[in-house]
Image (cartoon, rainbow, N blue to C red; front, side, top):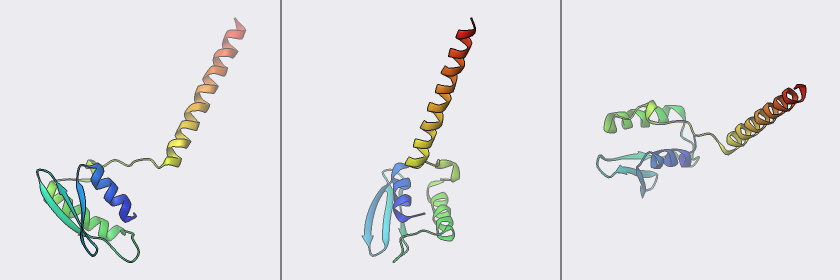
Length: 103
């Protein structure tokens, strides 16, 4: 996961993100306090081990679990889903046309 995706997920969950200096980013909520994560560098990718550590800290500090978050489809996935839905609708129309022509 890229650091920008992690920041986006946490801000979508209602947190604010503030650069604290160097690689430190302070994530805070209005009522529950804050937590500081040090982002990896020079490559801005959070590996599974670091992500798990972040998750444990979010659970300990805020009570958040995996269920707190949902997987957001990527733009390509949304487009693919729309194409599949359009094909389904077209095929239903063809079925209706075929059915009505038999009457």
